[in-house]
Image (cartoon, rainbow over all chains, first blue to last red; front, side, top):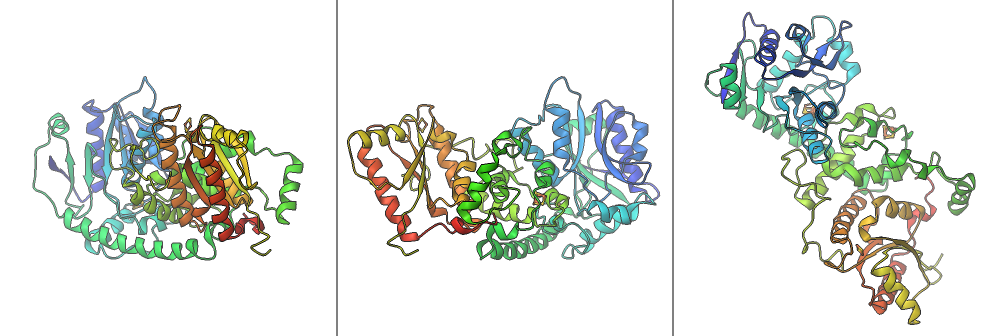
Length: 369
Length: 142
Ligand code: SF4
Ligand code: SF4
Ligand code: FES
């Protein structure tokens, strides 16, 4: 059902906080996972159980310190657990769907609250811009731009966001439809009939969201394709992965922040890479020289094999890379080809099996002869 | 190095129950095949993580063969079907990452197919000779 949260005195944030408070007060959820303003002006995800604390909630702050799918997994993978409303952006929800299929999260006691996304800033950019007046102007600017000029990207949002062609998520119990309307007047939301009845909300007319989303998606898709063409020219040309990742310092940050890379003990941190000293000398003799630390391209190529099929393009890896490598762009470009081969769409449905755990008897007969 | 001198090095990951036994049969039947292959035995083709294949490729192996039981015959029911999907993904990734995906082969060879094993090695050695050495042999910065 579609409905609207009334906004008083143009205070959209307060209206949203009020709505979240109702979820707690009506017992719809026991807790909420939402972005909170810290006393120091920064924004971090946090768990709220006391409705009063929602005065600190800043769910529209345009920053993504981490992909919240991992956090939702921590709150849901094991029992006993509480009923938690998780307020997430599209790339986080899509990662969450993938984690469910990897048994790292469970939707049974989660209430998914999807927020339309107009893009986010890197943490340092956000910190520079967004402290002070609760950063209200910051998100207003982004949603206004996305609504009034969907063809134009705000130049400072993250590289991943500029090429994100899935800024809205379909399939949450509650969707905060921020695109396509005047947020100082009201917040359009859609929610299940059951939740609407519980919260005592009545239907209202549809908004101008669909048309805006369509334009935004078209513009982002065009930027994405241009970025893909550029990185593919490098990957398929002389450079390849060894060239593109040449400056990698092997910090593993990209893997640490990846919501899909969930392994507790990654093979690259396991003792199988504790080679004997003479092993390195042997390898150096074979090639004349040997890159240290070892196996850097092996790391990237293996990770691609292990997770690229489920890459949702959140760009956390790119954010975390101290060498400023286009990690996320590479993985997304590869992901697009893989998903085409397997006709798979990460994050779309928990019912689409992960491509590498399923099979058909009579497929790719030309590859295994 | 000229082509006539180039002897490819092929790393073969063979499943214990079918292809490894097939390779053994080729040996005990005294079938002739090129000495270019180094065999690593695994319990099932489904146990071949891409990391093994990639390690061999980056170290300069000229060809990599994954051998398993024919579809339907895997001793763990579906290991080879899953291996096939993994190989499809791996080849797609290699292609998109600037590597030659045709250095990686997947073949189903049963325990009784000693001659099929010998033929496969012959065929693969010839195809890889045609390609020339893996450029990774001399690429240290990986
Ligand atoms: S990648 Fe997409 S959904 Fe994620 S923060 Fe950026 S614009 Fe939003
Ligand atoms: S974050 Fe960057 S430098 Fe660190 S391992 Fe990943 S690609 Fe390499
Ligand atoms: S046991 Fe031979 S492929 Fe699985």
